[in-house]
Length: 225
Image: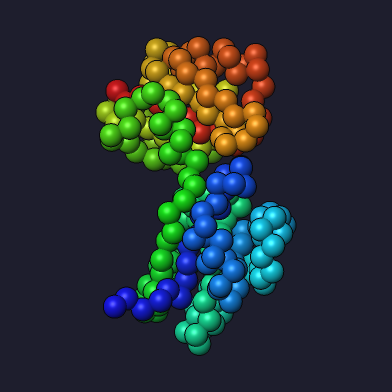
């Protein structure tokens, strides 16, 4: 029989607080402490569900420094849950490094199923979802040209995360590398009040968002070649 996990990876809602699972709530109540990207964001979630648990800061700027202490606590019998601000940890968020080091240390890790922004965006796009590549955030400068050049020949559906202030620039680059007529979809504010998905050619999407300044978290889904 598999031993109980030392570390739980717990997905949290990407917007609507009702999207958390009953199992996730139980785990958050039962663990000894919670590792969180931003204690204020996670604190709001915990307060909403009346969960009184110690939160320890764990983000991309301190994860290398805190891991040894976390591993030691888990070896001594403590249990913890890792959460990110929204969605599943380690998907364009901290988490991979801690999971890797726990596995190396012989500790048990379990990832709960739950919210991840790219899944509803992919399904909503109407673009084939049987095969796809998740690119997350493209490099801002170094390596961006090389990556886009390689992706221009990618036959599978491609998924990207992007910030609202860079969206139009990215769509213009997609037109240059993939062609004006490449079909794509832009989803934003998923699961929230102002959720929106706009579909069309890359050129059409560029014109739309050039005239309608986007807000919120954004997922771009692009058809493969």
